[in-house]
Amino acid sequence: MLNQSSQSQENQGKGRKTSIIIALLLLLAVVTIGYASLSATLNINGTSKIRDNTWNVSPSANDIECPQGEVCTINPENPTTVNPDDGTGQDPTGAVIWMDGNTIYFKHILTEPGDTFTFTCKFKNNGSINAKVASVTKTELTETQAKFLTYDVTYADGTPVAANDPLNVDGSHTFKVTVTYKNVDTLPTPEEYAQIQEFASLFTVNYEQA
Image 1 (cartoon, rainbow, N blue to C red):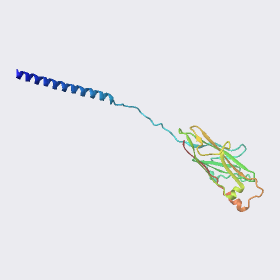
Image 2 (image 1 turned 180 degrees about the horizontal axis):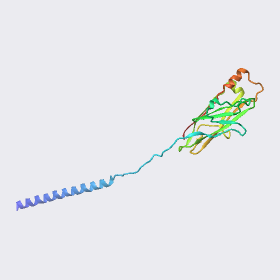
Image 3 (image 1 turned 45 degrees about the vertical axis):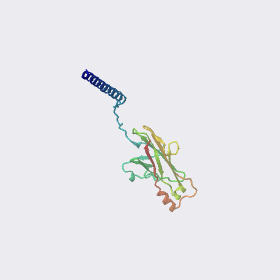
């Protein structure tokens, strides 16, 4: 009986022990499942494509215009060898305007006080990226040149060109170039005239991505 009793107790102990172990395993399983459900993985699957953008802010020879009645030669084959009319009528080409990349050059002779030469040129944004004016630089006249000449570049309506002016896709900026021989009472001396003849104008508009 004693043996049976102790065996029974031992079996009960084993049973309790077994029950406890099973309970722990079940509890562990519950905890594991619960934890797994709280740590689910989020997967985001997608594709991105970079658009094929282009940068193209440039002038066009077809968009250079001289005032009505002004004789202009635009983009001759050898522009540096073509001279504007000097007033004698022997070379009646008027103004000479040509492009080299994004630079527009011109030659014109002002014959007497009060003469003015004006032309317009258009820069267009033919690319796919919005642009804006980054900076503007302009040739400064010497003291002698400023005595007899004025030189300015504005937008076509006379508005000054300024940094941060927008030039969106398919938009354009039309610039007006004006050079004037001032209406002075005293004509330049030979020395002054030499300095005026040496006048080289340069106006640069730099663009950057907006």
